[in-house]
Image 1 (cartoon, rainbow, N blue to C red):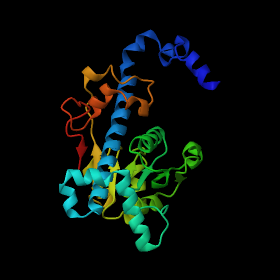
Image 2: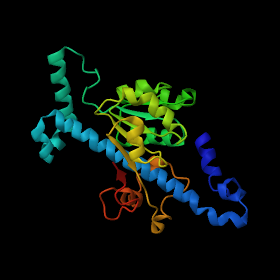
Image 3: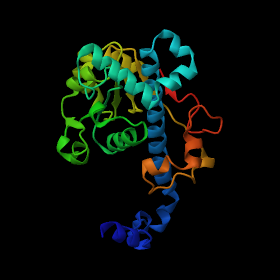
Amino acid sequence: DAGLEMDLLEDLETLKFESGIHEEDHNWLYLLGRSHGLMITACAHATFFCKLLHNLRYAGSLGPKSLFHPCQVEESLSSKSVLEKRTSKCRLTGLCEETQDDDALKVGIIGGGHLGKQLARTLLQLVPIPAENLQISTRRPETLDEFKKLGIQCFYQNTSLVGWANVVFLCCLPSQLPNICVEIQARLGKDCIVYSFVSAIPVSRLKLLLNHTNILRPQYQCAEDLAHIWGANKEITAALQDPAILQATCPYSPAGKGSPNFWHF
């Protein structure tokens, strides 16, 4: 089958990226691993942030005191507690159990390129965010059939997306960002968090463009002693199962060297 064929072709030297590069240019191949490492780190930190926000939203739904009691927070995230909470809400409102929970984290991604797709896969599998709580807005939604089949809404309506989402990830090109900001600023809710991967635009500039303050942007520094761990061909979700990569990307671990102070507000 196709999977077996891919396994057989995987180790063929002539099909590897490096085989088409002139020998004098091999010194630049480390950039491939660095780029992949940055992608893994970006997705890891976005996953961490969404999990944290998800936990806080559920904890907050139990009342202010629960935010200061880790045991109650943990209990609130158990499947039994969530089920009881939803069942209680159904009894009070008359809505069926399948109705989307108002406390559920809703995530929007603007940009359906390589980063946007990798981020969507990671959030779906590792947070995990249900498909109905994830939307992608891109100029070419027809290229996102794999996500549509999973039940994710993919369209080209940036204003609709930011009006719906609790967190909006900006995964667009720097040249596209000013126009996007003009388009969406009037629809951004005051509690919506904008998480920008557009490294060329600093947070101070974004605040002016969006007339919004709930903005954060990761900033990374590459650690040379970690360059060997990323694996240029490793899938992001698979990479984030690797203990060495998990340790390297952990934002609160001393061993995590993706970047100190990686979120800029």
